[in-house]
Structure formats: C-alpha cells, structure tokens
Image 1 (cartoon, rainbow, N blue to C red):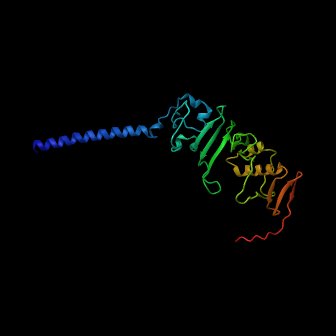
Image 2: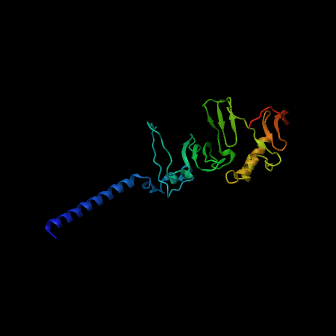
Image 3: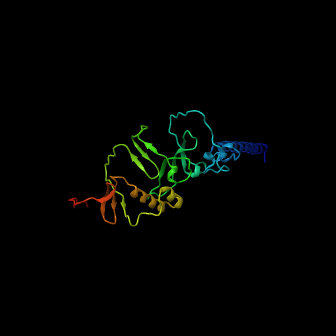
Length: 251
C-alpha cells in the first residue's frame, strides 16, 4: 500500500466518522422535538393532586401540561389530538373549564366506535358529579347566548325554543309499552344507581324511556308498536289519533 492510498483511506475514515456523529446529533435533536421525547413525565408535579388534572390521566406516562397564561390568536388551523396517551382517557380532544374550575365543556372522539353503525364524536357540558348520571350533565346551548331562545341539550333531553324546520321526515319514537319500558324505579336517580348509565346503557335507557312516557306533558306523541297507532297526551291522558288510509304509493 502506498502512502497516497493510505492517506485516502484514513481521510475517508475521518470523513465517515464526522458524518456518522453529525447524523447522530441531528437525529438526537429531532428526537427531542418529537412527541416521543415528551413522554419524560413529571409525576411529582403538584397539579396531579388536583382532580381535574389527574382524573383519567396517567401521571407516569403523560407529560406535565404546559401552561399559557395569555389569550391565544392563531392565523392558521388549530389541530388537536394525535397521541392518545396524552389525551384524557385517550379520547378527550378539548376541555374548557367553567368559572368554578371543575365543570367543563368536553369534546370527545372515538370513545364509542359504534353508535348506530358509525364512530361518534361527543360534545357536552360536564358538571361536578364526575360520573355518568343524569345530574352530571348541564345544558349545552347551541344557536345563541340568549335566555329562552335557541336549542339546549343535556344527557337525555333536548329543548328547542326556536322553530324546528324539518326538511325530511319527522319520525316518532316507535315504542312498545309492554316490552320497551323498565318500570321498576321511581326516578332517574334511582335508575342511575341501579344501572350504571355507561356500562349498562341499554337497561338504563329503558328506565329513561319509562320516565319520559310517565311524565309526558300534553302534546307529547309517540308511535305505539303494540297497538300500531299514534298516541298523543291530551288532558293528562294518552289517546290514540284517528287515521285513514293515505293515497301515497312509494316504491
């Protein structure tokens, strides 16, 4: 081997080493900017002692939240989500706390992957009971911030103060009074205690359906599957509406 060949090999080794170390440095810097690096948790953070932070979060896995004590203005799209390990329960995309610091509006994605055959997003105003009972959910109003106007939603009830303009069918609830109701509890609190609303949702819903028919006000209507007739509450009693055959032929 000549001196020239030796020098070329040595120079190649030095350049290769420099390139390798530079690549390792760049990868290390990139690693520090990716969500993987954020897994370095701080289980001693004092905030984990507060229920609103620790509830549904793994302090040994989730990074300490970053605090921004300032309004935020973005000129671009705000994108939330990504790593489920950093989201409460794995599906809380957004939480906005009320003035009590405990109740909140919550936006969820994919807690339920099959609601009526499709994945569901869920938006609600969660109170301070921190469970799935009826009293745990406040009203979520859509349309305006004007009292006695717009549309409000809770766990099992919707109130429409404004006109509802249907551009499609209005389909009454088809209910079998003999099969679809659970009459064994006096009120919604007792039913929630007997049937946990999330884990025993179908049985709980049968109780809710019973209370809805039992406590219905005049003007309420449903389709009685047993009698195959439309029922309406009039003067405090359920009465069937008279109908006649319609000349409608849709095939």
